[in-house]
Length: 77
Picture (cartoon, rainbow, N blue to C red):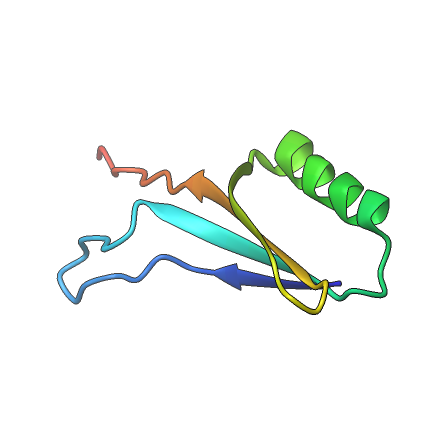
């Protein structure tokens, strides 16, 4: 199982291109599906991620895209 975090792209003047950050979980065909589901549920519960997309490939591999909104904090002093 492989996890890859995609950070939001930032413009030179501070504006964000994406309002979400993405976590991509890739599961090979020989790995357990219940274990992959548990990993996705764990990220959703504790990391505030939501399932955005899932895909099953011909060879049996799976990929899950999770996303969460990027919170920008504005300085007030």
